[in-house]
Length: 291
Length: 185
Image (cartoon, rainbow over the protein chains, first blue to last red):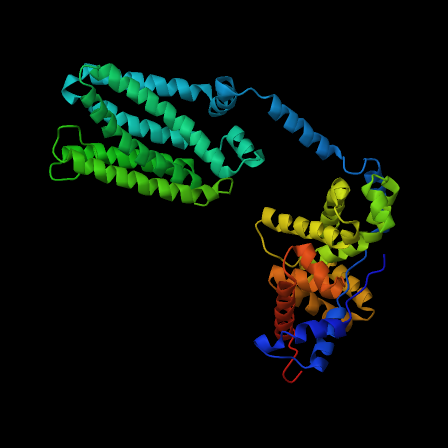
């Protein structure tokens, strides 16, 4: 088909009606400009390549190429997927495998050891569990969002869902698992004789857990795994050191100690801020990390 | 029109004729939108693959041309989005002494039907067009170089005719400044 340019006069009529908006242009001036624009011609495509391409296209029925068939198979697979609890398991198992079995086992062992230390070291009360739970969750987040993992990277690059959904889905599974372990440890240590005390202890580690996890997520996504790991270990290590220094404000306050409520409020506010910040960092998923 | 109707019904020969007939125009449109002949070849083929798949869904055969350009626009847009880049003009048109640059100049000179001076003018125009915002560039290329009517440009881009007119107006005003036309020229 012959290529044709619009007549300069026709274009002139169209643009001159709008000239009042931003200053006019004389017709002769436009014709000079149109002549210059016309000097830029596009190269012609390689005729043999076009013939080969058309011949290849003709091998497929119109409206039904291989890609269409693939989509149909995907839809059929989606329709055949079970719902309910079995469907949830179908969704959970690949995520569980993706993070790696070692992670789930090591997390459980760490919490069990923490509970044992707490039980054996009666003087410390429940401090080791309150200290351990946030750090474990934050390190879990660092581990599960390490971009060095080829499996994680592959899924992030090939998944058709948005990176944001992927991030929040994995975060829910990993942090949810650590929360379950820590609740189990708290209940095992304190028993159900005083449920109020159990919930106070749970709250004591829950707020720092969320704060540290969100902080770790944001740093992991923006700067990488090693930066987030170092940051959370340093921050939480300082908390343990500061707790021994009288006069310093520490985020590690146990139920019944002075300032528990104020520290809780501050921690939940910090967790919220960290969550908002890490949500902003989701856009960095899949990008090469700087620094 | 008859060819479009037959192609829509699944006639591969007719669909092939449509591809052959429009290949050059779509290639030129994508070349002017991206500034790269190599990329234009890939994106043109992607455009016709999508056309081949979507032909049975074409509602109005009489509007085949804007429909096809709309696919091409989406292909170019997807490409830019995928690479998170706005238009980057290729080295081959930047007047370096590399073989690709010489080839680009020769190509521009052949297209302009003149010698190196004519080719330089064509390169100036190409660079000026590449500096336009993408939404203005595409309107200019579709209206001026591809000869689509204002209504067809509007349908191809899915925007009102008034918006096409104003974008065209602003594109030409910008080009006037970029190419040094106007006062005293």
